[in-house]
Length: 458
Image (cartoon, rainbow, N blue to C red; front, side):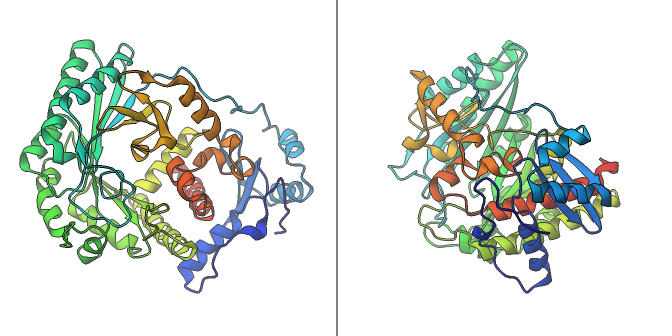
């Protein structure tokens, strides 16, 4: 397949590493075949089957050999729009350049404790305090945040309240009081509250298990491996390992989860790339689901993923995905959340100009009551959005959303994956650029192939 340099995309700019291991070679093949040739469509081969993504509307098709040749010719000649029109699958753009405005906030994450008892080398919160003085959110500020959120929720609507840190359980009393207040107000006004917490798990108690179950919390535990692998990346600040303690303390939650769901989130670094091993271990331990996220922007630069590590991670992700497909055919549950979420989004026809709701319907609240684009931007002027007391700064929000729109991002606006990835995590991109695009496109290509293979069963 020939490559044509189009609209500022240079195929020679890729830093995809050479691979020897067969699984890594397969992953590298995905990274190579997913290089952008057109902003309008993407053609790839899934074994003997040619498959096509039409970017406008995120539409997927299996192609016969004749149509494959027509697409190849159109790519070589730069006549994709004519081809789409001839096939009757063209249409007006579903996403324009306009940034959203007047958006009500429907989700807050509260940094109720800007402090932590672990010493993770890569932590975006710089070991919990976001580069400042360790602090806890007052009950007054937490209740004000809850009231602000609920007051913007329309009648009969739902709102999301997340507790983050640092380690949020350092400030357990405020977490409990804020949750109870939100629950009581929601009941009185006919609203649906959705609660979540991201925790390192070291401070969990049986009482927490009961409380989270009673309120239907989505509980996410940060676990970066099994045993020593986790301990090397997430030790206590004194250097001791934390894995055994976490697993003891999370067991009551795993035993009780019905309304509550307990998931594991793994931050992937070059030191913990055995993803399939972790996935199987955590699912066997009783976690509701397991997901992986590459470390792309560390405050110290330590443990960030390079191109070779990203190729290895993609190989591992595809291995997990292949096992998901195998078990799904047998009617077995295999809660690999990265693929599950991707399949759901493809089924819905997700088509978005942003990677998430940051700075729009979702904001982070610092311990002192300042508003930021999301939990990662707490105390970072790059994502400042106002205060609880004075409200959202409409000018800052409007400017943020205008600048972060995927049509304003280079080289995103010429990439076939732009409406599926939304341009990548704002915090990571602003911190370290876009060195994971080959990985992201390779993973998306695999997910689209898996969707088309599994579509009859979906």
